[in-house]
Image (tube, rainbow, N blue to C red; front, top):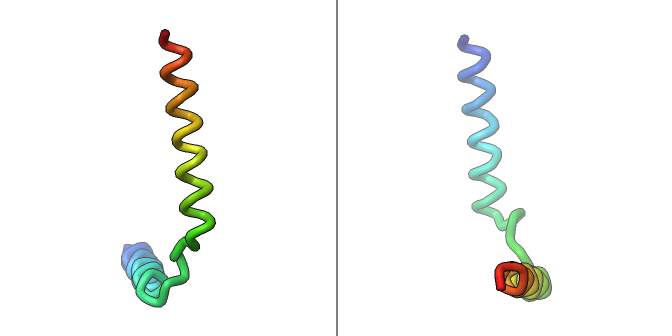
Length: 50
């Protein structure tokens, strides 16, 4: 039980540390590409429902 709690605590600390130092930050190009994908998917959904 203590091993499970300890492992979860270590992983949580690592994730918070990575997030704090910007490891998971996205570049502007990635954000633009994701927005295009979302717009394309939404357009396909609306066309499919018509």
